[in-house]
Length: 111
Image (cartoon, rainbow, N blue to C red; front, side):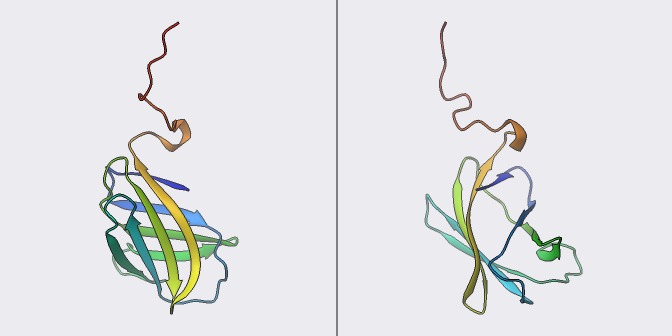
């Protein structure tokens, strides 16, 4: 599961793909609540330095622009010519990823 801050519009994370021989790939984001799908084409070289990727030490470093909604879950699929490169989940939150707690401010404990 990848964690992103919904307040940002540019997001990035690293992953290990199923294979490495590809040029332009497609990122399909699917909101698990609304079932709405968004297709984002991603290339190795982009003049605006958004919606691109590169491979470093075996990791695919992905960078893209998208306006996530707060506390929503998204499934995503990376494809090249209908071949799946990677499947995963994205959770959009405002908490820092290092301090992420699934039940943050959801329960109050009294001692």
